[in-house]
Amino acid sequence: MTERKKKVSEKIKQEVSEILQQDIKDPRIGFITITRVDVSADLKFARIFYSVLGDEKQKEDARQGLESAKKYTRKKLGERLTMRYTPEIAFRLDESAEYSIRIGKVFEQLEEERQEKEKEHPDD
Image 1 (cartoon, rainbow, N blue to C red):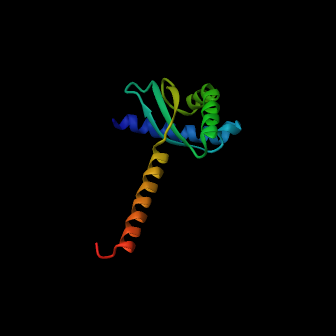
Image 2: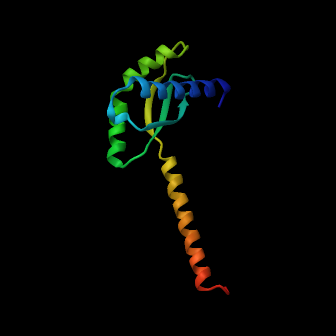
Image 3: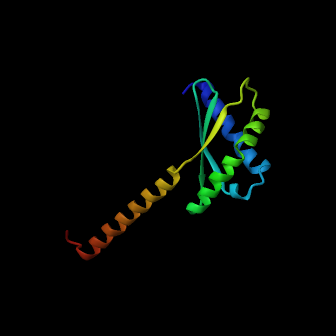
Protein backbone atom coordinates (compact mmCIF):
# COMPACT_ATOMS: atom_id res chain seq x y z
CA MET A 1 0.00 0.00 0.00
CA THR A 2 1.36 3.40 -0.94
CA GLU A 3 1.99 6.05 1.68
CA ARG A 4 -0.81 8.20 0.23
CA LYS A 5 -3.32 5.33 0.44
CA LYS A 6 -2.30 4.68 4.04
CA LYS A 7 -2.80 8.32 5.00
CA VAL A 8 -6.16 8.54 3.24
CA SER A 9 -7.31 5.26 4.84
CA GLU A 10 -6.36 6.45 8.31
CA LYS A 11 -7.97 9.85 7.79
CA ILE A 12 -11.22 8.27 6.56
CA LYS A 13 -11.20 5.85 9.51
CA GLN A 14 -10.77 8.71 11.97
CA GLU A 15 -13.35 10.99 10.36
CA VAL A 16 -16.03 8.31 9.86
CA SER A 17 -15.60 7.22 13.50
CA GLU A 18 -16.19 10.79 14.63
CA ILE A 19 -19.13 11.28 12.26
CA LEU A 20 -20.82 8.12 13.54
CA GLN A 21 -20.25 9.09 17.18
CA GLN A 22 -21.09 12.77 16.99
CA ASP A 23 -23.39 13.40 14.03
CA ILE A 24 -25.49 10.27 13.53
CA LYS A 25 -28.34 9.93 16.02
CA ASP A 26 -29.56 6.51 14.86
CA PRO A 27 -29.71 4.20 17.92
CA ARG A 28 -28.93 1.19 15.70
CA ILE A 29 -25.40 2.57 15.25
CA GLY A 30 -24.68 2.66 18.98
CA PHE A 31 -21.78 0.27 19.55
CA ILE A 32 -19.90 0.26 16.28
CA THR A 33 -16.14 0.40 15.99
CA ILE A 34 -14.46 1.24 12.69
CA THR A 35 -11.66 -1.32 12.44
CA ARG A 36 -10.04 -0.45 9.13
CA VAL A 37 -10.55 1.23 5.77
CA ASP A 38 -9.40 -0.06 2.39
CA VAL A 39 -9.25 2.50 -0.40
CA SER A 40 -8.93 1.80 -4.11
CA ALA A 41 -5.77 2.72 -6.00
CA ASP A 42 -7.43 5.83 -7.48
CA LEU A 43 -8.83 6.81 -4.02
CA LYS A 44 -12.37 6.98 -5.40
CA PHE A 45 -13.77 4.06 -3.41
CA ALA A 46 -13.44 3.23 0.29
CA ARG A 47 -14.51 0.00 1.93
CA ILE A 48 -15.07 0.73 5.62
CA PHE A 49 -14.89 -2.27 7.95
CA TYR A 50 -16.68 -2.14 11.29
CA SER A 51 -17.29 -4.43 14.22
CA VAL A 52 -20.33 -4.69 16.45
CA LEU A 53 -20.55 -6.27 19.86
CA GLY A 54 -23.77 -8.16 20.15
CA ASP A 55 -25.95 -10.84 18.67
CA GLU A 56 -27.06 -11.31 15.08
CA LYS A 57 -30.01 -8.94 15.48
CA GLN A 58 -27.76 -6.14 16.71
CA LYS A 59 -25.39 -6.76 13.80
CA GLU A 60 -28.27 -6.59 11.33
CA ASP A 61 -29.64 -3.45 12.98
CA ALA A 62 -26.19 -1.85 12.77
CA ARG A 63 -25.90 -2.81 9.10
CA GLN A 64 -29.27 -1.25 8.34
CA GLY A 65 -28.41 1.88 10.32
CA LEU A 66 -25.10 2.31 8.50
CA GLU A 67 -26.74 1.73 5.14
CA SER A 68 -29.39 4.36 5.83
CA ALA A 69 -26.71 6.84 7.00
CA LYS A 70 -24.31 6.16 4.13
CA LYS A 71 -25.16 9.21 1.99
CA TYR A 72 -25.08 11.55 4.96
CA THR A 73 -21.79 10.05 6.17
CA ARG A 74 -20.23 10.50 2.73
CA LYS A 75 -21.43 14.11 2.58
CA LYS A 76 -19.94 14.88 6.01
CA LEU A 77 -16.76 13.06 5.04
CA GLY A 78 -16.47 15.24 1.93
CA GLU A 79 -16.69 18.35 4.10
CA ARG A 80 -13.83 17.09 6.27
CA LEU A 81 -11.44 15.71 3.65
CA THR A 82 -9.15 17.89 1.58
CA MET A 83 -9.43 15.78 -1.56
CA ARG A 84 -10.68 16.56 -5.02
CA TYR A 85 -13.16 13.67 -4.92
CA THR A 86 -14.97 12.23 -1.95
CA PRO A 87 -14.69 8.46 -2.22
CA GLU A 88 -17.79 6.34 -2.60
CA ILE A 89 -18.15 4.37 0.60
CA ALA A 90 -19.33 0.90 1.46
CA PHE A 91 -19.63 -0.54 4.95
CA ARG A 92 -18.57 -4.14 5.59
CA LEU A 93 -18.87 -6.14 8.80
CA ASP A 94 -15.43 -7.12 10.10
CA GLU A 95 -15.71 -10.46 11.84
CA SER A 96 -11.98 -10.86 12.50
CA ALA A 97 -12.32 -9.80 16.16
CA GLU A 98 -15.00 -12.43 16.76
CA TYR A 99 -12.89 -14.99 14.93
CA SER A 100 -9.93 -14.18 17.19
CA ILE A 101 -12.10 -14.57 20.28
CA ARG A 102 -13.38 -17.95 19.05
CA ILE A 103 -9.84 -19.13 18.34
CA GLY A 104 -8.75 -17.97 21.80
CA LYS A 105 -11.59 -19.93 23.40
CA VAL A 106 -10.60 -23.05 21.46
CA PHE A 107 -7.01 -22.72 22.71
CA GLU A 108 -8.24 -22.24 26.28
CA GLN A 109 -10.41 -25.34 25.98
CA LEU A 110 -7.51 -27.39 24.59
CA GLU A 111 -5.28 -26.22 27.44
CA GLU A 112 -7.91 -27.18 30.02
CA GLU A 113 -8.26 -30.63 28.43
CA ARG A 114 -4.47 -31.06 28.46
CA GLN A 115 -4.31 -30.13 32.16
CA GLU A 116 -7.15 -32.54 32.97
CA LYS A 117 -5.30 -35.38 31.19
CA GLU A 118 -2.14 -34.59 33.17
CA LYS A 119 -4.11 -34.79 36.42
CA GLU A 120 -5.66 -38.13 35.43
CA HIS A 121 -2.42 -39.63 34.08
CA PRO A 122 0.56 -37.86 35.68
CA ASP A 123 3.05 -40.52 34.47
CA ASP A 124 2.33 -40.10 30.74
